[in-house]
Length: 373
Image 1 (cartoon, rainbow, N blue to C red):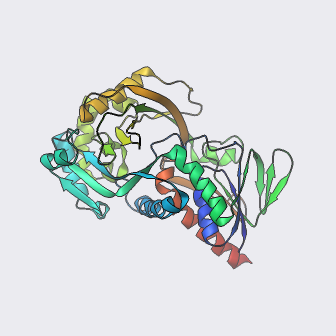
Image 2 (cartoon, rainbow, N blue to C red):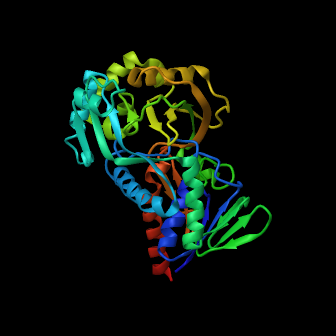
Image 3 (tube, rainbow, N blue to C red):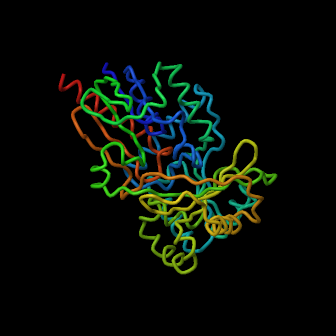
């Protein structure tokens, strides 16, 4: 089997390392930082299947969730929560949920009445009922990514070289900042939102910018969520709902009633950690170089969305920001040279779709390599 070099040790790079290692390849992963520190750990750790864009993206998410469940135990990764509860706050949301249930994307989903939603989650306000899915899951990403890295090294012999900045890639060879080289039959480059180091012309051609998000951790409220929770605003952000014709009415109403939230790209996600604390967010601001500072007004707006669904929010105990590469579409896949693939997830769905995407990319690369051999 070919030797494979992966550039980038975030979730996209790790997914490709797993896909290659499972095929018997010898894998080396290079990363400029000492440990994962970017978008892969600054998120919910929420592997979202329900609501992903219909078709290929939804299928990738289904496959990725299955792989997360396969590797979690062996890698020592705790699955913190299973499923998803999408609560309907407005009558127009009920129509979207009903329409969603008529699609193939409703696999593993149950439509709940308002009373059934309250029985499942007494804290949640869902006058229009809810959608309950069993396909989704959540891990604590700041723990899961290091554990996945260590397991890949121990179980598959994947070699990790942290603190190794890559400055050049060509067929069969990766050049590091110190002038040394790493040889590999196949190279997969997963640089996330770093477009200045490698292939800036491809990033420019694809129209990639950065999306900045803000997130909060709230003190443990003394009760448990049965699963992660979303609400009406998620139905206009997640294309699995938003692309349905029935979503037009909820889009119009939210445009009138939630101008502030939509302006900051806010939609509610609330998940819970093992210690009972809640991770809540998030917002979306787009800029090639977004500022590093949080806006208190955005945090306050996110907390208002929380309060509308789950009641008075507990105290904020932690705040952070993150950035990821953003462009139209789920991802960009390019072939800068023979045996080299550039893979960038541009939709903020790295945790949710990377495992499925990586199987496609590695399978195609190895097939091409065998054909050309």
